[in-house]
Image (tube, rainbow, N blue to C red):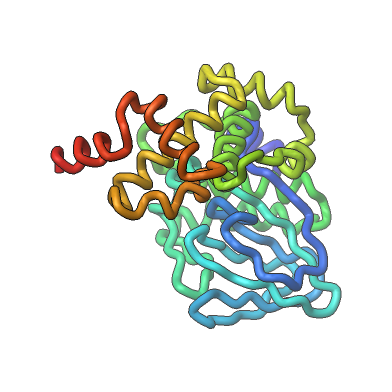
Length: 268
């Protein structure tokens, strides 16, 4: 399988984490991107927020859309592998597959289905081999990309870390002091390495990037909730008090909250 498809395999697409004996509800903060899950042993049940439930067993694949809430209900010897695709990459192949409310994997065309089957058969030949599963999920992307006229550049490892690290900031922006330790442990990198990647990609170090998004989020809050209610949301932006919200907003936007609100709404 690797020999046949080696030229298609990107440097880095997916983040793989082994998750065993799941019984708790998994929210979007745990699964920030569209992804597939692969049952590696036993049987279990997946239940989406609209109460559509299906049983999965070893070798089964389920697509998880990041916009839904779902739970994985533990059964005997149940374990899965999680393959989380970066959101930008997913758009390359979503147009080639249908995903119904029960999150069943349904290819739209025979060509795509056959291409997927080749990868899947290679995986099933030795489904306990982790590299085979990595190849297989990379090839799910290739199934879509093979039919895209202008093939987009695939993410490098640094690109993925830069984007997923920024996503981590966005997901935790309500924290006054964001704790990066879970992210660093998951990706096996140091805080210095992550900081360097941020600088190379965004021209901002970690603290500057956090401040930038905190203030952009604050501007969005002012625009969205109006100038009479925004003070209720200061803590969602990670500020200690309304006074800090006022002060930092004025320094960042070079205008008061009220002035900014009037300006953006005058343009609508």
